[in-house]
Image 1 (tube, rainbow, N blue to C red):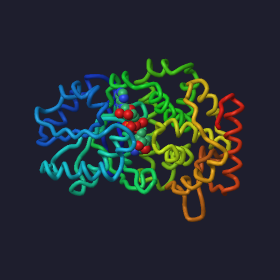
Image 2 (cartoon, protein in one colour):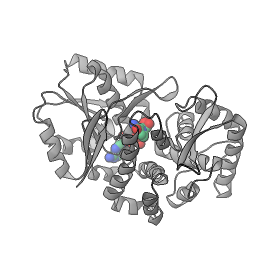
Image 3 (cartoon, protein in one colour):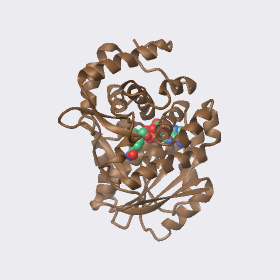
Image 4 (cartoon, rainbow, N blue to C red):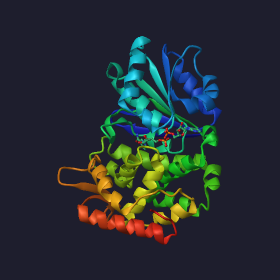
Length: 353
Ligand SMILES: NC(=O)c1ccc[n+]([C@@H]2O[C@H](COP(=O)([O-])OP(=O)(O)OC[C@H]3O[C@@H](n4cnc5c(N)ncnc54)[C@H](O)[C@@H]3O)[C@@H](O)[C@H]2O)c1
């Protein structure tokens, strides 16, 4: 078992990474709690709820939402909030967010706003969630904009049972790996470990160590800047273009796969320390279909990015002085980078249109 600690102005909380032994800590934490609410998606409920249930009190409120990013919306937020009202959930309750990043963000936002905030615990079940379960960003997508409604609301604890990952489909290993790679660009030690890996199964074998190392990187940035007024924004590396293609694909593309392409795009603006295209190839990321004339629409989505300010779109790019910086780019500069991005992909033998 590995134990990490997050220490931010609003809260100090533990992260347990391991197997069944971590849930004995969860049991302890729930001992005096009268109302436990589990928010979970259908897939995770069917695959893994029976195992979690062994460690929960006899009576819990289970709220199941459909799997997939489309549930991270106002509609499901309203339905869940209404379910808490109908069941007379009070302020002493604890919400368990049991699932991947979608559930963590959605259940976390419900917990952050219900009765002005009830406690919540993250029980992540995807590799990608190593990123989303730390740092307290909770949100839903609204108005065609990713994470447009949200809050900074830290969990009480994180319990990461690595056996849950066994059932993850390949594309969700790739999706999670993309965020590990992103954290690697912020930590040469982690990037070295990624570079030593030849294929995805090697990641699965060493997943506990990778999780702990990648989360340690995230924790450092969150602790330095809880509310993202400065260096925490570097964690958005690859996300401006990533979120744009995620929206372009109407959320049918796993988040991390969009981010992987976002890293490739950033590499065209300012080269990263190692080429992200190499990871695309080595870890057999799925090809996405983008055409030259899709740029206009992608640019529109990039303008909705939360780093964008009135004067234009901003990207996290590598920098000579600090590891990264936030930089403005014009429409023409981004269009040129997009052309190079498509060319680069075609040169690798992949067809984009
Ligand atoms: N809050 C943050 O700081 C932060 C950071 C990164 C990403 N995110 C958000 O996280 C979300 C993406 O997270 P995700 O990729 O985990 O998506 P997800 O939660 O939608 O999970 C992906 C798919 O895997 C399934 N799944 C989950 N656990 C499984 C398991 N153990 N076995 C088999 N299938 C399983 C889910 O049902 C879903 O279909 C996005 O909404 C993104 O915006 C948030």
